[in-house]
Length: 156
Picture 1 (cartoon, rainbow, N blue to C red):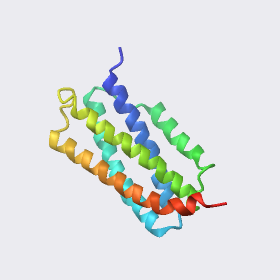
Picture 2: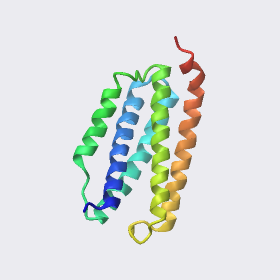
Picture 3: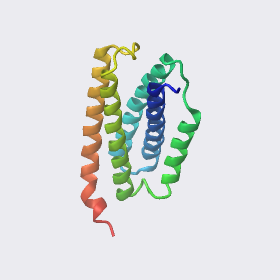
Picture 4: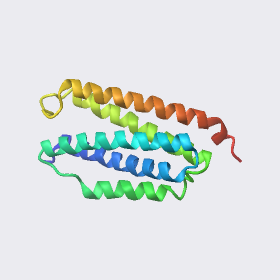
């Protein structure tokens, strides 16, 4: 029987692959300088969170699921046909996707708090820090997203 925790962690790792790819594209493709700089900073934080996930997967005697990660990357690249990251509406939708993903990541850290015996790699304080960082990331992404909302939703 597959390890449910391992599958859960691999799913979140695939989600982080999507976020990393999207943030990398956003940092490079947008002419909105503040958004590009923010995307690069957030990308560094998400990559740090990915390392934590990879360590947790290794602790469960698992490996990264290359297929899931590749599909996440590919899905994000396909999304570029819809999202023009140099237009306000595309930036708005990209930030909304990131916002949803960060909410999912917070749910992950919160769920892991409920199964401390299964996760020995993370000290409870570290887990609280990850939750706090996810909340901060969500707040920052939402500020950018809502700043773009009026212009993005009024585009013809």
